[in-house]
Image 1 (cartoon, rainbow, N blue to C red):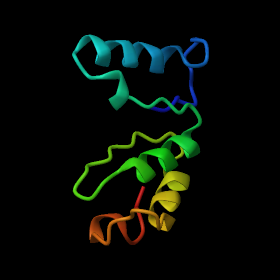
Image 2: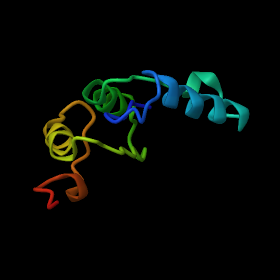
Image 3: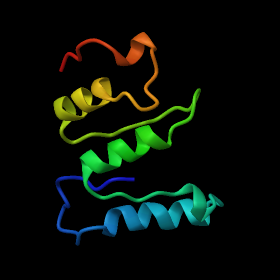
Length: 89
């Protein structure tokens, strides 16, 4: 999980904490939850943690920056055409 740029009046980390609590109450093991607040670092962590055939869902604030980060990633990056090329916004 990452933190939105617009905190909507909440303290830093509060929204992701609420999502984490909900995931735990729903039965997701704490070991399966990673909270990285800065967007760039959160995207990098998600890409590095992903295994072949995993689905990584990213809700980005800085869409163009994150898209460039994803397409430049070479750690476990897929060769799938769905993450290559230019993104139209």
